[in-house]
Image 1 (cartoon, rainbow, N blue to C red):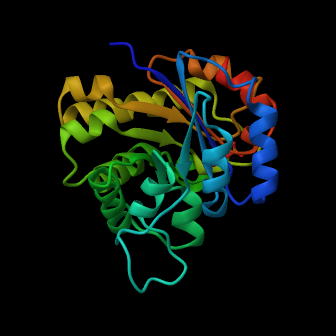
Image 2 (image 1 turned 60 degrees about the horizontal axis):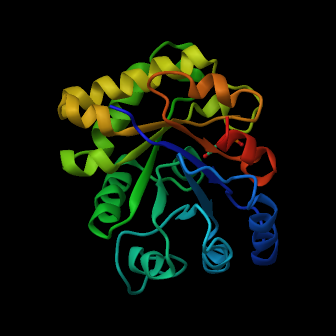
Length: 248
Ligand code: 13P
């Protein structure tokens, strides 16, 4: 079946609120494409102004993180109802920077996936191996383990709406992109795993992105692969190049 392409920017910890509004204006005409879901995942403080700035356009807004409880004494955190009320539709979960820098493990990531679905947010669930695992040739087992743990207790109907981002850590922010064949190998593996854990219909619907130094020059080749349904883009999502990726 034809899956709808999804191109998401992960702005990470970049852009003040006024800079965020300016970037939305700069990208507005460049990211027009009715055949693609376009998402800006932005810092928490930019969510409200960005939702306002993209009103009436084809852009959807995502968050980069949230906590699994609705409200209470969790200093510094932001909840799913807060995101929903602000107009957020997607949330990145399990990015390698949250796993490695902020110590998030697969138990918490699994809770976040379930909480996001229960709250009406679409998770963009990230997985990916380190350079050491790639060199040791154990990356396939690693990815399978991450996805299996992160989806524990998640239903087939939910997985049909899920977005999974394969982001090899060695390709993030390094300028070293996985080749299209390397990216396809793992995205295909993830789809086969979903077929094994659920069923073929679910595997046919789940959308799988590649992320890691994706740019205007390499996007078309990566996106031409059968199991790559989109991209999760860091650095290049902050530039007019993002429009070229959307339209690649
Ligand atoms: P870069 O595109 O900057 O390599 O970042 C990828 C990424 O981590 C997106 O989530």
